[in-house]
Length: 631
Image 1 (spheres, rainbow, N blue to C red):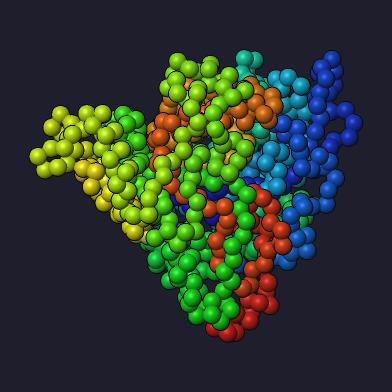
Image 2 (cartoon, helix red, strand yellow; image 1 turned 90 degrees about the vertical axis):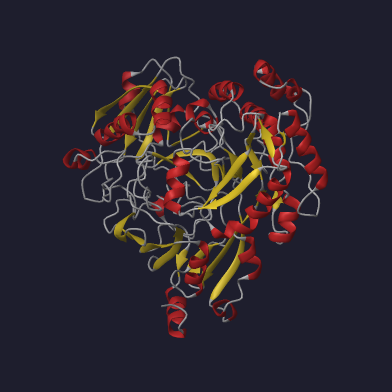
């Protein structure tokens, strides 16, 4: 099952999926693999957990704990996105701008749930089997899965999809998986085997291959389409929704697949509740908010503290037509902030980055511009066990000592780096003096016009963005930098230009960040290591050999505590490297919606789930229409 959820970054037009299905019953009796590998202890299961703590250890449960099993089906869910789109292929990361949710039609053999941070459950399979060594895995696929064009999904589609990804997916993905997988083969129509490289760490290899999207071999071969090309045609998927209609840069509507193979599956109970999901595109957030007030769309997740604090007093709120609600968010906040382009070369000196960071005043910004609604982010894994604290000790210290030749010695002995403290005035004079001293140490001195120079050249810093709502946040920071002597400017461009320039690392600083989670492993190298240089997943183009080494060794960990120690060590190094100026975070969802949507009383910790396990109340919707609340 696919969970639709909202996105916060224009760089991330792909679906932020936290999928909500678990596996079906175990196959009874001896399996193909059991007979062939009779001398090898084989694990047969419906699910796998890296650290052995499944939320649903038995396949025999009626539904996921957090859904309403009696939720009605029907109605439309409508929301918004900024900018535009010209591509329906989300896997073409170097071409075009994919439509929001354009990956939602494609499912994978294994899926996670929104209340199990570490579990991966059979979804397109009934069971899996593998030796304790994880040298290979065999997935026993369901025989009732069909693509939206009516063709059955078989093991050949899984094999084809893997090979297609290996030929045409992003370079960092191909590089990582090529080292991991030796071979993949269809043993019969509904049995597929992945064999892993003998010398590759086996920590999460099964989860990796089980999480690959499954495409239709028939469609790709008949159309000649490529995975890496921008196109306004989408191949058939196995998911509950498919593209219904679209207008480039304006609107896209996903509709329920009337022949969805899993509609009556027990694990789909209480989910995929809407008949259609409509996305309206707006040039900017201001226009989108006006559209919401007018009823052009009916659900809004708010990201602006200004709007949340001051703008929700319009007639639809006063009339009780719109619900304004703060809901808990148990996810690790994104590691967002002002990102330095480390590829440019102008920020190579840590002292320069430290000086520029000192000029951002969180305290004043939060109190004066954000109504005191946020907290200052310190860690890349804020509010999680994975955040480094105090001085390193135990296993974390041991790991740091293994990379001591690549890091500043103070990392081994000092307390973890935290953001600087700022005063209540926009320009903190104490931080200004510290920043000037750092710049002088780095060779930057005031020129004839008072601006900082090095070798006769000024330091120019362009902040690149696309949203007018950021004007009031960034402009005071730019003003502070100018007082430091930096030739700083805020350049707001249209979303298409922004996508193109950031994709090509044609910027100095942007507001962006990194997606992180409460469990880390295989993907760390792609996000924060040399493996991901040039990818959209690593917006700073950051790399450090110490992080590379730890991102590699985390693949071998066997316990949760060892994983935590690795991530804390990496967090400590990256906070010291300061390639992102940390800003703010919020541990809640701010949502407003027309009072025709309902949700379970207790939400799961890792998803809002507004497009999946929320539902439509037809009586309330009719009342709103009768009152003139909706168009």
